[in-house]
Image (cartoon, rainbow over all chains, first blue to last red; front, top):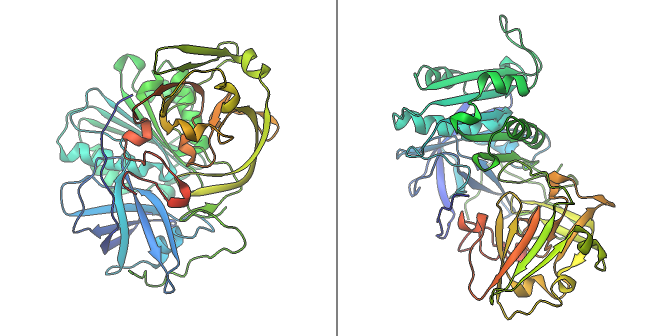
Length: 250
Length: 197
């Protein structure tokens, strides 16, 4: 496995909310000004810390949704029903508010523009967030590396980054395919989960030697990773990030 | 103190958890890649010492060692804690009883390529096990079966899934998450999540 030395102390710093953008009924993108942000690699995450009047604190980790080119960073947060932190981030936080964070964290589920070989991204639900950061980094580096995104959503209204994905998919080097599991838009006959046939039709083959990034809820990631290995992909080239119930007490 | 305007939070009482953790009753999964499927008839656990000696156990040899029932709280660096989880396995005191070593550190290896580093003393004195049952059943592959390390006093990434052996050494080599910016020791009560914490 690839080794990345990233060892330095992570301190809490205060970001300011510059903007918020509704993505779906339950997800919101938060644009942050972070004066001392050291930069990050596409795919990394950060910790957010909230503090109540009386000093009570709660922290959670969130994938970074944007690529770093200086300036602002973006988080996209899906509200977890009964969660402690995500409902605040999705419903309460507003432009001008402070937000404490530290990071970036994680040196495995990352893509670097200088990396060799095609990139296969497979996301389920809000698992698309770090994959969007990878697509953004790819666009900003004007990379000619072929990238394919398979994005599994329940229905058309569940799609995060609708406009952004359209723009990103206009590149000759980027292919974006949506997979609908409950309800598809008019003209899209297929409704159902990602299966072996779909992987066979739409994903890079083992002979292409892609690096594959799979992110989503645990059952999604387990199922997709198993399909990839069964299709002959080298497990060492399949990187996963699982979203457990990290939004709050279940 | 930076107050988050409008945040009230959800305080808990009665249960003492390490700082920054919340309680879950589920069993979330965190792994860096696909879940390896390891057959017990191919399973092997190897200990290599600082002097170059190696010791091996196959599945039968592991099961032949005296097992213990273990009930412990577990704490994941992704902030969930789960109380009173029940395991069955072999204490590393038992596994390492006849291993000649004066090493200070262990680098634990897993099927699939995962590694994690621990001081050897954290694996001894009733603090660590090779577990092969969870909740009375064989450990499911996605939770590290057929056998995983169980070191519940440290963040759960130290409890390597799909464990296949360890290399004992006088110097500390960092493991997979430790190299990627996580803390080299990982005490949840000191909230040692990331390097430098």
